[in-house]
Length: 311
Image (cartoon, rainbow, N blue to C red; front, side, top):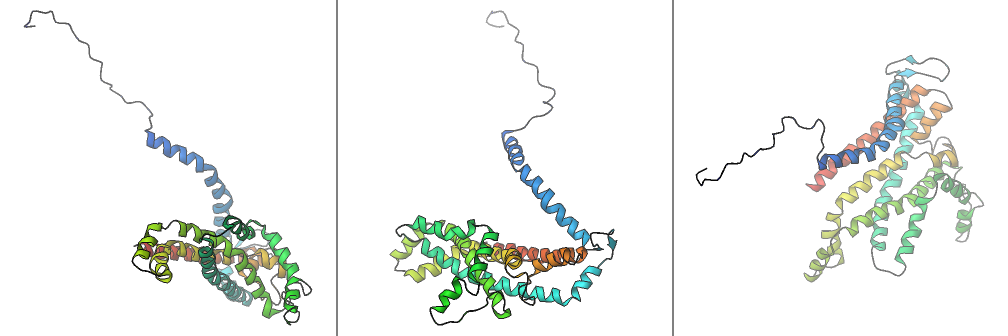
């Protein structure tokens, strides 16, 4: 060196010529951990949901009576359903039940949520009391209401106090379906009220305070703040209520067995009856595929409306 000091050789570490055979970044490790957490649920859905659905769709193209080998018929089961008046009746009953349950739920659940969102004494206990119907087993609900609708049950007893005679709620065509619709509304309103309540509490209070300072009244605040910001929740409630009503099965099975004269034979009960009472499993699978197609249609409508509402 120029300063006269001896030069000391410095050994630099050799550059890595090959990367480690397997390495994960922190973000990838989080993704793998998350996937492992949801893997049991995915396996459950794949084994007990998606595989049976695929099998049912495949079975809808075969004639099968549980005793002989399946026989391929193509669209024969769908043609048989088209020519079956009971299938058309079940579609009509399902449409009446679905609209009769879902539409009242949209408005009653919103009104209940607005009421429960206000400050009042014992609000927590009131919310719990309204949510109890959801926690009850569907079988228990059906049996309890079957006793309530008995000709000598509580419902007729209350009506007798106002001068209305006894009604055979579950034995007459004119009253059987409305009786089931009333149960569906009674059970569904608290559930969707909780959904609405979550949406209401997610709206910042600053918007209401600013509107009040500008002189907006309660109706104006509801019209221009609550409804627009609650639109995604409303769309979710609308579609989910329709889907849940379309799949009703326990109440017609336990309370009316589809009667009287098919007035409460909804499409899920028709599927059950066709498959396990008449042993026409191919037609039952075709009807279930049609029900799935209707549910899928409503889901796609939900996504489209939600995308348009958030735009």
